[in-house]
Image 1: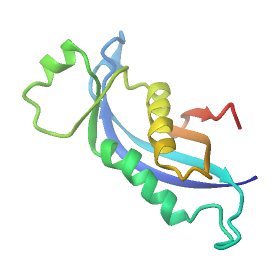
Image 2: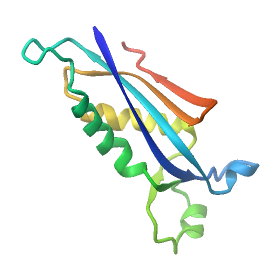
Image 3: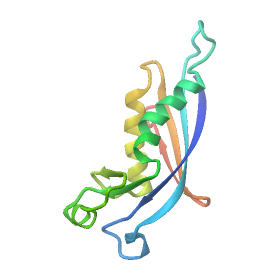
Image 4: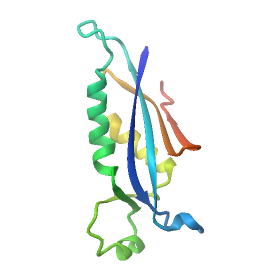
Length: 139
């Protein structure tokens, strides 16, 4: 199997409503995501997947919902606090930690990949020195 990786960046803010400390306040990050997919080379195209196709998948699954969004856990506290907010909010079922965000991304990306392509690994950088890795344990 051969793999290829596409990197994207996006800006987003979040807060951790169950956190005791400064991360319970709204704060932002320049997130950097590296998505690695793999598969067999298609003899008709001599590619596993066109980088443009992978970029489009990342646009739909990650950038459209998260870029310049406020990412929040959907709970009564956040619904109350942000009820008057008119900006872009992406609601998650869990706290928007990098661990939960990368799980969410893996599901969204996998759902859009062609059946012959497998998501192998994701690296989500929250800061220049802190990142989370998701790996396909079946691969």
